[in-house]
Image 1 (cartoon, rainbow, N blue to C red):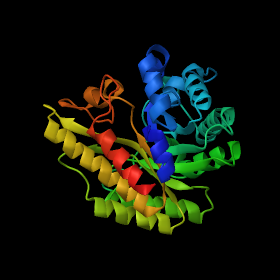
Image 2 (cartoon, helix red, strand yellow):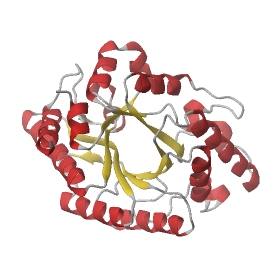
Image 3 (tube, one colour):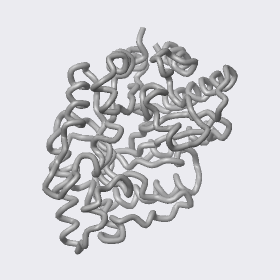
Length: 319
């Protein structure tokens, strides 16, 4: 049975970030996505730069194609991302903005993007990576011009555009207990205290074999998030391996995938398990981490790796 069906039966939907180019050109990639995954995230197609390249210009082609594909194959969709400090178009980041003018631009961007897919996208990463690893606020373009309340503004705008969508704060290096996860909880607690519609926290989980988090600490973090009535989703999971990649390293990677899936399943608060890519051929890892590769569940030929088989085992045990 395909992973997507095993995961659904276990109660933890399995997803993947999708790149528009291989989706158009690679039949094997399309077939793998439709067969093995029940959820998709637009890897880049909904970020500011690709989708809003000029103030009065939108480029919906790639995002529309991914959402159409998901709808055709009965896959849920996560929207990613409405506010981030990276991949912003030049007109935005290098403009001379007053606070009122940029507020109008941000609200209009969110209204247009979320509104276009209203009812078709169930969850959005509203704000992405607003906290440094030491727990301090990241000094982003948005914070510099709009001040710290830019987060409130973004969540309120997303909620107005689609009141039924679940809205997430999303970040990396925050899976386990620590300074950064503490700061994120304080941030989200503050927003909710002010009446901001935040429904969950996305834990990206870009992990490194050989330097994995303590999964008991991850479980404790998920527990305290859930205790606040918040949902948790694993949103960008990959576990990169330093070359050379060996059978032993692939087995260790499989054990790590299994441990994280077990942690999510045990919590009851984890509602998605999304890998950042579907196959090693389309992974961002080799291009961003020199000397690392093989981070995902399926290899370059779309064949299942030990990690995929380990997930099948843990999902089967839940049925």
